[in-house]
Amino acid sequence: MKGLVCLLLLLETFVCVVQHQVDGGLNENEISQQLRSEDGRQNPPQTDTLRDEASTDSQQTCEPSFPDIYAALRELTATVTEQKVNIRNLETQLRDEMNKKNDEISNLTLGQVELRKENRDREIAFSAALVQSGGRNYIGPFTTGITLTYRNVFTNIGNAYNPVTGVFTAPLKGAYMFRVSVFGIGPTAATADIYKNEERVVVARAYQPEQGLNSSNGVVLILEVGDVVYVRLSSGFRISDDQYNRNTFSGFLLFPLR
Image: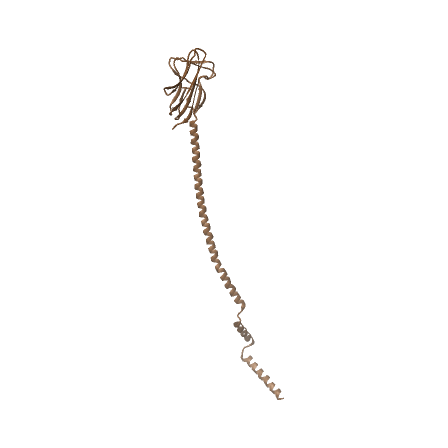
């Protein structure tokens, strides 16, 4: 019995203590918040910590990348600028070379034109006979010598020979070749003399009592510009010609001289 009384007393005492804690102390919510606060101080929230760490890592990762991009852009810009300069220099070099080539082509073209003109100036040749058509014609004899006019022109390149006067005029200084052929009927002798300016140079002459007379001669002359060459029939001589062109006068430039 005594033991039962003691147990009841202990239960009453415990109830009183608990009631005192409830009435004068913290309520249940405050106790819970306090417990959570204590737990938070001992173990900080993992979510915020991870978020902060991720933000820090992101900043550490992103911040260095921007300078790297700027440096790459600056390097690329410098490379492009350098390439532009190189391209401009190359264009200038190509333009200079093209202008040089064009000048060379122009000079070559001018040289070719001058060479053609010079070659045309060197194209000098003529050949002519006394009569143009008809039967036998006699020229001479005369009491004085005459200049023969070879009117039947076969060739007159350069137009240095005048068929009206029978005179060849040198258009440029050079060495020229001249030939003359003569034909006549005996017994009168036939002759033809090549003259340079007023000087007789060579003579072609033939004589026999009857029938045809033939002779020819030639000479190379150094002529200055304006020198003249022609053929004369001396006094007392006679020549004859027909459609076969037996009397001819020819000449051509061998080569020019400086």
